[in-house]
Image (cartoon, rainbow, N blue to C red):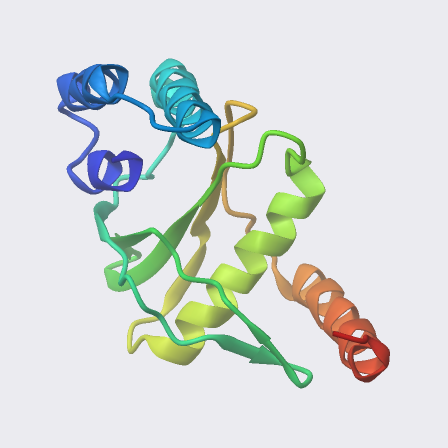
Length: 178
């Protein structure tokens, strides 16, 4: 619902309200169902309160693919799957970016972690798209904490941090027992 709302240009606020209303009318069969419904309503309410903070920088949003290629870094396959693709123009040239939605309540991203996500988004787009990537259009919406993190202008150091983490994962992976 949130990705579709953004892809629709964030104009139909009633769509969020309808989604919350529909969730409120569901009849949960289990405690897990009730928690899911409540969490989804909470996410929609929090997102609704942060709409004004989301800056698409004049880009045209569209839904991202449901299935996207993984980003391969240092022998590790990373599922990036941007929920929203952003298309824009910078200095007369068509560019592309992406928006990643983050939902976990217990682990808000913060500025530093969102920078790593933005760098991974940019790298993913560079590998999978034909248009030049504008890293400032590679942003993160941390729905649970109600924060929007604009894409950074520089991603090289952040991507090095992603690579360092992948090196560590690749080194430890063989020793992990199922």
